[in-house]
Length: 199
Ligand code: ADP
Ligand code: NI
Image (cartoon, rainbow, N blue to C red):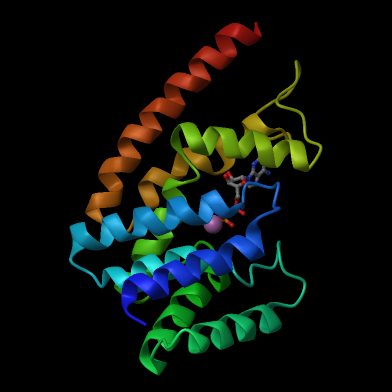
């Protein structure tokens, strides 16, 4: 298979795995991360096949979503073999996925990992990031916010202060940093408006 066919096969595989997720980790999250990773790879002159492929599969084996991590990763290996990915491709994709999901908060060693981590973080901020936060909060049964809430209570708005407003400072690549700044600004504006309307 050539790389176009491989990426198509990966897309179909990811559809079957994440199709019915309602926690913000649906097929379209994987698609946005894959496309953003490819874009960042072009900007940063990294391997765009590996970045796009790893973007598609980056949440496979995530402990929040899979009860048996080793099994999910083994299935991924088998699948990649079945579409003729080389041993090198499989090990780099696998390393990227493990680096991102084992080391939440840490920086992956290789450029592909850095890029996919940036793409995943970019999807948590901006307009789509806001939507995912409230979707995730609803799935957890969490309030949007409440009258006497402070920024430490477990509400969806609290998550902006706990995590999302810090992500633009944690981008690995210059290309991602630029996109993050614009999305960050949008979230600040959104929160100002949110609190104006809440009063
Ligand atoms: P990923 O696994 O894709 O790296 P996370 O699992 O950390 O990302 O988060 C998935 C989505 O859910 C993100 O958009 C994130 O902001 C949101 N999220 C995570 N924790 C919370 C929370 N406590 N309240 C609201 N949203 C959350
Ligand atoms: Ni993700």
